[in-house]
Length: 147
Image 1: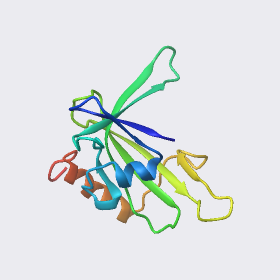
Image 2: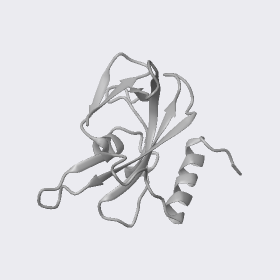
Image 3: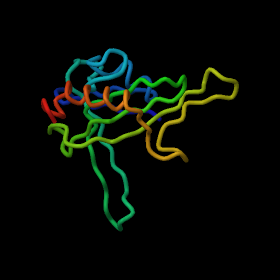
């Protein structure tokens, strides 16, 4: 799945070819190779991804603006949970989180990059991963000290 990153300060857009490209090459590196705030490929300014999803409720659409992405390192060699930090408005602050994962088995014969919620449900976090997630959410300003 490709991602279209739009810039908050110029009319240009940047494309990430997949979730790994988005995390590793299209963020400000706040978390080194594990993501950060999205950035414009031209100006380096803050970027966002506008996403619309149809809800089960008739005529309802969930619109969100992805502002940052944080990948959480796990002990597994192929399973990677990550979180999109979203805003309800294009220029607004992060006000909600969207938990996801990807599984990268491309190094194996017949392997592929799978992104989503899969048949196993939402991402699973062990205590160390969840603790790291909380640390990173504090670093992003989503959680204040002591929250």
